[in-house]
Image (cartoon, one colour):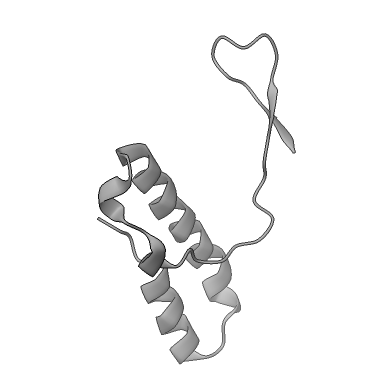
Amino acid sequence: MIGTDIAGAEKPVNAFETLTLAPIDRRLIDVSMLSEAELTWLNDYHARVARTVRPHLDDNATKLWLDEATAALK
């Protein structure tokens, strides 16, 4: 865990650090229920997954799958 400063808090609080990177299944997401901040977080996370994982893939079919799985939601 890492310390995170929260406005108004007396001291930094614990937060979680991402240990693994895998796309979140888009079929399980109802975009209409997400706030703008949640949608931004999800799209940023998927961009991070693609940026980090894609260079380690050899198979073009797997790269195409990752591109689709991490495409930005609107």
